[in-house]
Image 1 (cartoon, rainbow, N blue to C red):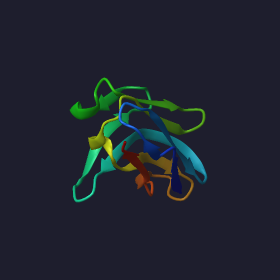
Image 2 (image 1 turned 60 degrees about the horizontal axis):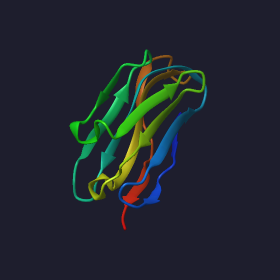
Image 3 (image 1 turned 135 degrees about the horizontal axis):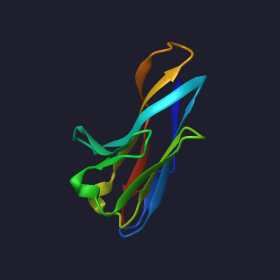
Image 4 (image 1 turned 90 degrees about the horizontal axis):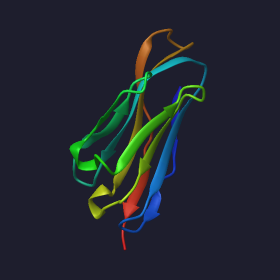
Length: 120
Protein backbone atom coordinates (compact mmCIF):
# COMPACT_ATOMS: atom_id res chain seq x y z
CA UNK A 1 0.00 0.00 0.00
CA UNK A 2 1.23 3.47 -0.90
CA UNK A 3 -0.30 6.90 -0.46
CA UNK A 4 0.09 8.95 -3.63
CA UNK A 5 -0.01 12.69 -2.97
CA UNK A 6 -0.07 15.35 -5.64
CA UNK A 7 -0.78 19.02 -6.16
CA UNK A 8 2.17 20.72 -4.52
CA UNK A 9 4.11 23.47 -6.18
CA UNK A 10 5.16 27.11 -6.12
CA UNK A 11 2.54 29.74 -5.39
CA UNK A 12 2.59 33.42 -4.53
CA UNK A 13 1.33 34.69 -1.16
CA UNK A 14 -2.44 34.94 -1.22
CA UNK A 15 -2.69 32.21 -3.81
CA UNK A 16 -4.31 28.78 -3.69
CA UNK A 17 -3.35 25.17 -4.18
CA UNK A 18 -5.25 21.91 -3.93
CA UNK A 19 -3.57 18.77 -2.71
CA UNK A 20 -4.96 15.30 -3.23
CA UNK A 21 -3.98 11.89 -1.93
CA UNK A 22 -5.12 8.40 -2.89
CA UNK A 23 -3.94 5.05 -1.59
CA UNK A 24 -2.83 2.47 -4.11
CA UNK A 25 -3.12 -1.26 -3.64
CA UNK A 26 -5.95 -3.58 -2.71
CA UNK A 27 -7.89 -1.39 -0.27
CA UNK A 28 -10.80 -2.73 1.76
CA UNK A 29 -11.68 0.46 3.64
CA UNK A 30 -10.17 3.82 4.49
CA UNK A 31 -10.90 5.34 7.88
CA UNK A 32 -9.39 8.58 9.22
CA UNK A 33 -7.34 10.58 6.71
CA UNK A 34 -5.32 13.70 7.17
CA UNK A 35 -2.59 16.09 6.17
CA UNK A 36 0.51 17.02 8.13
CA UNK A 37 3.34 19.33 7.21
CA UNK A 38 6.99 19.76 8.04
CA UNK A 39 8.81 23.02 7.47
CA UNK A 40 12.62 23.07 7.18
CA UNK A 41 14.20 22.53 10.58
CA UNK A 42 10.88 21.93 12.31
CA UNK A 43 8.86 18.96 13.46
CA UNK A 44 5.98 17.47 11.53
CA UNK A 45 2.71 19.07 12.59
CA UNK A 46 -0.96 18.37 12.08
CA UNK A 47 -2.70 20.43 9.42
CA UNK A 48 -6.13 18.81 9.22
CA UNK A 49 -7.86 15.47 9.63
CA UNK A 50 -11.17 14.05 8.48
CA UNK A 51 -13.05 10.96 9.58
CA UNK A 52 -14.83 8.63 7.22
CA UNK A 53 -18.07 10.28 8.28
CA UNK A 54 -16.75 13.73 7.43
CA UNK A 55 -15.89 15.18 10.84
CA UNK A 56 -12.95 17.53 10.53
CA UNK A 57 -10.23 18.94 12.73
CA UNK A 58 -7.84 21.78 11.85
CA UNK A 59 -4.72 23.33 13.22
CA UNK A 60 -5.44 26.85 14.48
CA UNK A 61 -2.94 28.27 11.99
CA UNK A 62 -4.98 27.12 8.98
CA UNK A 63 -8.55 27.52 10.21
CA UNK A 64 -10.60 29.60 7.80
CA UNK A 65 -8.03 29.22 5.01
CA UNK A 66 -7.70 25.47 4.43
CA UNK A 67 -10.47 22.96 3.83
CA UNK A 68 -10.08 19.21 4.05
CA UNK A 69 -12.54 16.97 2.25
CA UNK A 70 -12.76 13.43 0.97
CA UNK A 71 -14.41 11.29 -1.63
CA UNK A 72 -15.06 7.90 -0.05
CA UNK A 73 -15.93 6.33 -3.39
CA UNK A 74 -12.46 7.21 -4.66
CA UNK A 75 -10.67 6.75 -1.29
CA UNK A 76 -9.25 10.22 -1.88
CA UNK A 77 -8.59 13.07 0.52
CA UNK A 78 -8.18 16.67 -0.59
CA UNK A 79 -6.73 19.78 0.99
CA UNK A 80 -7.86 23.07 -0.50
CA UNK A 81 -5.42 25.75 0.59
CA UNK A 82 -6.43 29.38 0.12
CA UNK A 83 -4.85 32.67 1.19
CA UNK A 84 -1.48 30.98 1.39
CA UNK A 85 1.22 32.62 3.49
CA UNK A 86 5.01 32.39 3.49
CA UNK A 87 4.79 30.33 6.67
CA UNK A 88 2.73 27.65 4.91
CA UNK A 89 5.87 26.62 3.03
CA UNK A 90 6.54 22.98 3.95
CA UNK A 91 6.48 19.42 2.78
CA UNK A 92 2.90 18.21 3.13
CA UNK A 93 2.34 14.59 4.04
CA UNK A 94 -0.79 12.57 3.56
CA UNK A 95 -1.77 10.15 6.33
CA UNK A 96 -4.43 7.47 6.43
CA UNK A 97 -5.72 4.64 8.56
CA UNK A 98 -6.82 1.91 6.24
CA UNK A 99 -7.48 -1.78 5.90
CA UNK A 100 -6.00 -3.61 2.94
CA UNK A 101 -5.82 -7.18 1.79
CA UNK A 102 -2.15 -7.15 2.86
CA UNK A 103 -2.97 -7.18 6.57
CA UNK A 104 -6.79 -7.22 7.03
CA UNK A 105 -6.08 -4.89 9.96
CA UNK A 106 -6.35 -1.12 10.42
CA UNK A 107 -2.84 0.20 9.73
CA UNK A 108 -1.56 3.78 9.62
CA UNK A 109 0.28 4.86 6.47
CA UNK A 110 2.24 7.94 5.45
CA UNK A 111 2.72 9.31 1.97
CA UNK A 112 6.11 10.52 0.73
CA UNK A 113 5.18 14.18 0.85
CA UNK A 114 4.61 16.94 -1.64
CA UNK A 115 6.40 20.28 -1.44
CA UNK A 116 4.43 23.50 -1.17
CA UNK A 117 6.47 26.68 -1.57
CA UNK A 118 4.89 30.07 -0.98
CA UNK A 119 7.15 32.74 -2.41
CA UNK A 120 6.93 35.99 -4.28
